[in-house]
Length: 320
Ligand code: TRP
Image (cartoon, rainbow, N blue to C red; front, top):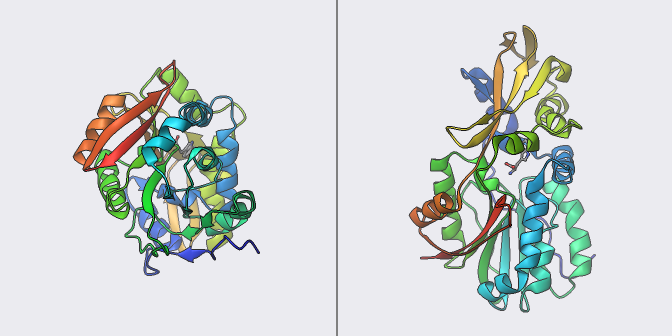
């Protein structure tokens, strides 16, 4: 065992809605929907890592390049002896850039909804950073978090990359930023945000030629089959992800390709031919519109970095 690695701890109250409850509720609505946090079981987390490597998905590589290019400045803003708390930590790839640049970081706290995946990826990090206290947490970062205190109470900074903020409707995004500010105890937040751009480029990023995004979307149905014994036919649904320019967002759906009935937890669900199931939104911001929202959430937006093509942005927000 790695001495610097704490045991995986759960930080969201157990009385939370289960996948089954949420699915029964969402598929009972008109129009039907499935909550996007359920994308990320272990299989979904791996598919998402594959999305991040796709030629069409410019977001990950652009953000990584920005973090690398400005790591020194970011480390200066974060200050010495910090705890980095990452919201939706995934593969733990990006944080290495921060850890390598940071001045004597004390602790790293990755929070992710996929405990199985987090357990697998956290070991490599523990071995590579033996002086760092690693405290992996499984939980839903949209719910109140009971964060255990660290021995010397180091100053905490937040890390929220990948434009995950875009997966929330503007009102929910603002509420989430507020809640994050509360859990940071006055520390700053480093957030990655995808920018409004040519719709053709946006469309391609969510409709890749290899069909990985389609598999990722359909993993919701396969997960319901695996975990809940549902009988979705993934071939009976199509991945559909148009860009809604007026709302500045990619909207993701699974479209029923025929009239069909699916059994879930002993209940039948009817799908009409062509009926959509909404699975995700990915809102795009301008640098200004994101900074304005951060302001309204109680942050002072400070530094912002973007690439030459203005594809993506990384923001340093200070708590007010
Ligand atoms: N935060 C990512 C984004 O909005 C999540 C994402 C990328 C995603 N590709 C996806 C979510 C495909 C669902 C389906 O870009």
